[in-house]
Amino acid sequence: MPDLEQSLQGRDLGHLRIIAEHWGVEFNAPDARVGIQRLAPVLVNREMLNEVIECLPEGARRALDELCKKDGRLSWAFFTRRYGAVREMGAARRDRERPYLNQLASATEALWYRGLIGRAFFNTPSGPEEFAYLPEEFVAILPFEESSAPQQLGRPATQLEKTYLFAATDRILDDACTMLAGFRRQRTLESLSANLLCGANTPYPLTAAALKGLLASAGLLTPNGAPKPDAVRRFLEASRAQALLQLVNGWLHSIEFNEIRLIPDLETEGEWRNDPLSARRAVLDFLSVIPGSMVGQTGSEERPFWSISSFVAAIRQNFPDFQRSAGDYDAWYLRNRVTNQYLRGFEFWDDVDGALLRFIIGGPLFWLGIVELGLDAEPAADHPPNLTAFRFSAWAQRLLDLQPPPDLPEEKEWVIVRSDASIRVPLLTPRAVRYQIARFSEWEGFAQGVYLYRITPSSLESARQQGLQPPQIQALLKRSSRVIPPGILSALERWGNIGAETHAEAVTILKVSDPVILQALRQSKAARFLGEALDPKTVIIRRSAWKKIAAALAELGYLAETTVEGDE
Image (cartoon, rainbow, N blue to C red; front, side, top):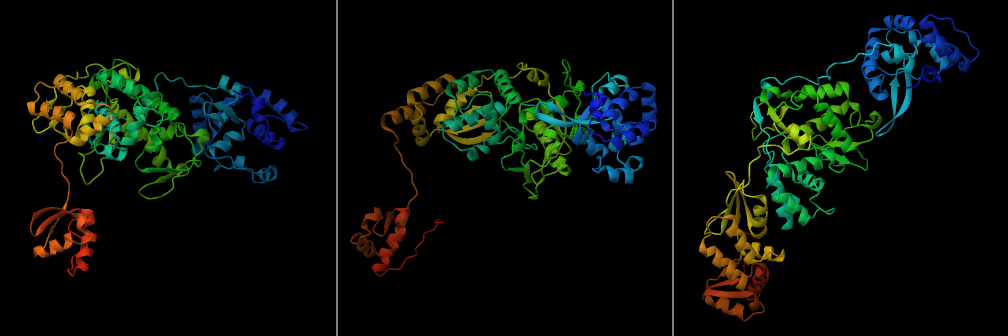
């Protein structure tokens, strides 16, 4: 911390006289440089300092107390937002208006004109930042408070705030398997979104974009988003505990996974950059003082639900700049998707910084099984769920210490193959098995704890393009199911030898009132568009050729509609 002489640098001779007047000391100097050398030693006096502090206005006392509690320095932006600014004015105006005697002056000005605080830039992990600070001589004699326990941020949740609960799950592992298999089938993020189950009905359901980011952070995707075959195989073959830990570890250390760009109501614009890793670590530090985060606190009674509104309010009160470099609230271009309003300035802290706190808790920390959630009402289809409480899960401490959580279920369920070519894959089927099944069958949904797939010629053709052949499919089904209908094995074998034996397509049927009309068409230039005749008055035609046939009929003297039922 700079010393008192350094903190007085830059103050003019008139300012030094004001400080001396407040301290009740005689002061005389020819210029500011000599004045600082003469005044600074006089002020290093415990008795005089206590007298000055006792005469401070109430707000200035609170500001000084907070500086003492925060090791003698606070961000200048934070300090002046809370305790008021030092008004910029020249020496003549200052001496004329005498703001240091105004009882309505800010607490910051009261400390500034008494020489109790300095203002300087210090290096921080995010770069130089301006701070209000106590000179080191004052730090040595002021009564710094030593807290025996960490500051508690917020309060326990009320009964209403935990009306409806969501327990921690490892469902994200199943969604990861779904997405990795979908990528092998060249499916888009948009098409995969509807297949994700983690966080359903919660305020922050897992999105395809967020899951892709988590998979990339865990080292499972290449820079262009394609699955890494060996890494994916190891991930899917690992126990659920080890696989979950891999996702947690990747998220905890990722510099690319950017939560603020995933908040549903926020639209980001421009080229500005933030530091998601630093913000994430700050949030985890705040959460570390919440009951239930300590080693050994695994019982539910030791992990109380915590009010999220009170937690966010406490962060705003005590650490509002946790993700902002130098307290800058104008550099980021963010817009509310609903209101279309730009969110720049500290007045939108709740909409941006508060929203990030809620999202990290209700999103990644919940998806990864680290916290459980509480709502003030059961989720309803016509009303977005309101996140009101959270608590640490029984797995939290192990996961945050990068240890696999205990008691996760073993994947040993059998696949059920039916004679209609459908495949039922229970949740606790080995993920590596479901991944392979998804490569050669079509997704049909999820119901009652079972993934539903169906083998089709097109899905088998897609599998063949991925290098998966019918003998491999047969071997997989034999290993992972108790019984396989003989017809399915035969169909796979025939498909491998012959390919698809049936074909279905949408066609248009032309029906005329007189067979003569069809005969005339077959002798016209439109004959090539006619297909198989079903009877003398009915013929199959290619759907895309209908307008050409209608034109040919008109030339023959028969009017017809230019569109058919079902056309857009």
